[in-house]
Amino acid sequence: MHIWQVGCQMNAADADSLAERCAEIGMRPGAELPDADLAILVTCAIRQHAEDKAASKLGELAKWKEQRPGRAIALTGCMAGEHGAGLLHRFRYLDYVFDMRDTDGFFARLQDTFQGSLEGPVPLPASDRLCAYLPVILGCNEMCTYCIVPFVRGRESSRPSSEVVAEAGRVVEGGVREITLLGQNVNSYLDPETGEGLAGLLARVDSVPGLERLRFLTSHPRNASEELLQAIADLPRLCENLYLPVQSGDDQCLRRMKRDYRAGDYLRILERARALVPGIGLSTDIIVGFCGETEEEFLSTYRMLEEVEFDTVHVQAYSPRPGTAAYRRADDVPLPEKQERLQRVLALQREISARRNRALVGQRVEVLVEGVGERCRPYGRTRQNRLAWLEPGPKVGDLLSAEVVRATAWQLQCA
Ligand code: SAH
Ligand code: SF4
Ligand code: F3S
Image (cartoon, helix red, strand yellow):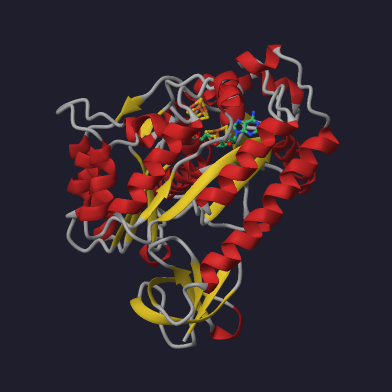
C-alpha cells in the first residue's frame, strides 16, 4: 500500500499510525505506487489549495487504478472530516472515506480484503524512525474566525500523560531519538487524570531514558505560560525553540480574527522567552490579506517581523473556508494585493534569516544526523531547528557538535 500525505504534522502523525496499523495486518506500508494495491490519501482542508491538491492526486490515481484490477483508493484526514462520505459521489474512483478518529471499521475491511494474499506481518524498520511525532491533544477549542480546524478536528481532548510517557518509552526503545509532542494548541494540554499542564508533561517525557531531544508544537499565545517558558530553560532535552503563531501584528486585525490577545501581549511573551532562554529559536505563522486588512494593518505586521527577527516565518495568503465565521465576511483584499504582501514578508524574512544564520559562523552547534544527502553529506537539525550540513562521516542517529563555517538564509554548513 502507498500513503500520500499533505497538511500539518497532525497528518504526518496520522500517516505514521496508519502505516503501523497496516503493517500489523500484513500489508507493506512503504510501497511505491506501481507496486501498491491500495493508496491512502491523508488530506488537509486548511486552504482551498490543499483540497485542490487532493483532487488532482485523485485524478492521477484514477489512471493508476485502471491499470490493475483490485486496486483501491481510500481518503482520510481533514477533508474526510469536512465532507464525509459525500466525497464518494464527487470522486468516483474513491473507494473508502474514513475518519481518523475511528479507523477500526476501515481496518476490519482491509483485513478482509488483503490478509489472505500476504505472508504475515511486515514490521516497520525502526531505523527509519529517528524522529517521532506524538499527538498529545486533539482538536481545538479556539474559534479563530478564519480557521476550519475546530470544525474538522472537533473539541480539545488530551491524552493521559501516563499513556504519552509509555508511548514515548516504546518509541525510544524502537530507535527514536527525538520526540515532538503535537497539538493544534499543544499548550492547552491538560492531563485528564492529574490536571497537569504541558510543562508537567514535558518534564515527564524529558526524563525518558535514551531520548536525546524533545520538541512541541504548535502553541497558542493565550497559554504561553511562565511555567512553560521556564520548562524550556530548565529541561535538558527540551530544545530551545518556541513555535508561537501570531497571525497578525495589528490589534484590529487580531480582534477580527478573534485571537484574543494584542500585539503587545505577544511581544511581552517573546521578550520573556528570550530573557529566560538565551538564543531561543522563534517561529511564527502569519496570514496576509485577511478580510478587511488595510495596508496600515499589514504594515503593523511587517514592523513586528522587523522588530522581533524570527528564525522562521510561515506566511499564507488568507483563503476563505466554508462554515467559518470569516466566510460570511467579504474576502475583500484582491488576490494580487495578497500576493504582494506575501512576497514582501518572504523577502524581509529571507534577509533576517540570512543575517541570523550568518551570526552563527564560528560557533558550535549540536546536530542530530537525520539523513545522508548528495555526495555522502550527512544533514540534520540544530536544537533551534536549523538545517545543518556536515562533512561526510557521521551516520544517521549520531548526535554531535560541529562548527558552523558558512550560512545562508535556509541552512548552515558545518565542518
Ligand atoms: N493551531 C495553530 C495553527 C493551525 S493552522 C494556531 O493556532 O496558530 C496552521 C496555520 O494555517 C495557521 O497558523 C494559519 O497561519 C494558517 N491558516 C489557518 N487558516 C487559514 C486560512 N483560512 N487561510 C490562510 N491561512 C490559514
Ligand atoms: Fe485554528 Fe485558531 Fe484553533 Fe489554531 S487556535 S487551530 S488557528 S482555530
Ligand atoms: Fe490541514 Fe487538518 Fe492540519 S486542515 S493543517 S491537516 S489539522
